[in-house]
Image 1 (cartoon, rainbow, N blue to C red):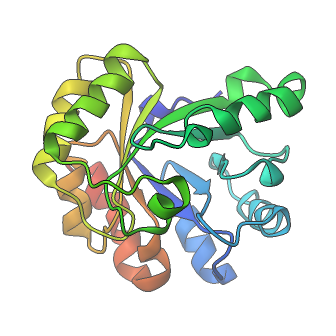
Image 2: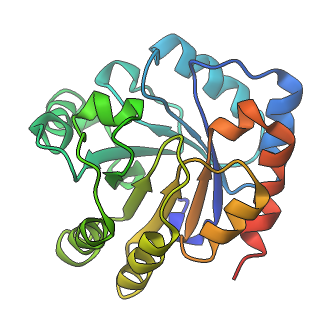
Length: 232
């Protein structure tokens, strides 16, 4: 079984975006620790399955980030279950999770399920609009959510998500300090366009997630693997 605490870098691929075979091969053989399949819109069972089959040709963990019950399918190594900490809409905290357990619980391997405590810090992004996380958390809020995830709920992952915008480095540093006292793994994602940005966030986050840059700046995105793994 894969242990996310041993990871430093992951690429997040959107099933609703096109990626050719050559670039996919370079991404999967880049030295990244895992491929996460997930997105906020246009995600269907068909395009999830198609991408999973393509990634499965390579010897690295393939993870599904579950955004709806319709895309849950066997074949992934792990299933990341987002629970949005900074929303008032209960469906995104426990509601959809309850429905999943009710419908699929008997079929699921508990060891493959990993809950992500999400703090969505960019209210303009698609994920915020989808989940109702429309208030921008400041650095103190982010610290509190980190404590909630790590100290109170003891979640496997705290995910600070800026989605399309490079985040507040000082807020990430403070969250890292808080989570260093816990067994919660600190994931950072959002707005990373350069190896330098990846290295900077890699000094604080346990795992740096690179997504859109794969499609927009592929050569620079590929450099983020080494940059993160060489960061202190």
